[in-house]
Image 1 (cartoon, protein in one colour):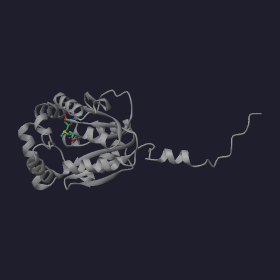
Image 2: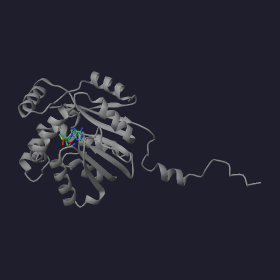
Image 3: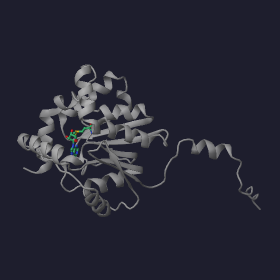
Image 4: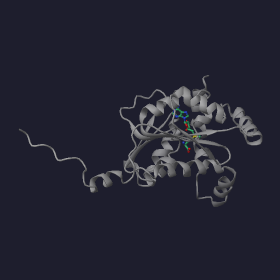
Length: 241
Ligand SMILES: C[S@@+](CC[C@H](N)C(=O)[O-])C[C@H]1O[C@@H](n2cnc3c(N)ncnc32)[C@H](O)[C@@H]1O
């Protein structure tokens, strides 16, 4: 079975338990997760920080899972979020959650593989959190994300640490799901392969990096207002002869 199929099968089964990592109802478990899975929360916080310079933007949430982050991106100012995931049970949870939060009309959740899905539009930001963990050769998806983004690509990559990395490898191996780690050196090679030249690797929760790559023109928050309010320095147009 291919890696992507093993990942899909795993998350199809594990959707509910994955989503419970985010549940705030059980305060005790929530705080345990916040301490022991700090990277999970840090990568979301860092991603939202990267959105503050934009206004009225759209997001493609690659591997959106149960849609928790998609809803957070709306709260951070996104006008519309499209979440894509190849595990149908994850999408079911995402639809339920966005409806419960009253934002269902501002998001669409689509079933498919983000590498090949025929998107009809581009997005201001493309984001993938907790997705490259399961992809051995990340360049193809990264290149796709860059081709679909107007302003920025944001993607989380886990790095290997002896205790956490080994534990995770064993845990996922038992469950039949692949898991990969990417060193900064390897990430730089992946970025080259994906055609990304201008990027930052932001350390994330001691467990990996958030890759932030500006692409195309950037719509800075307030920039349009500024342009409107400043008197033009161009000479007035000549009257037609
Ligand atoms: C660990 S979950 C992360 C969910 C969410 N991004 C989050 O941070 O809470 C990873 C998700 O990525 C999905 N996924 C992995 N590779 C994918 C691909 N190529 N296309 C679509 N979904 C993918 C899996 O099905 C799974 O639901």
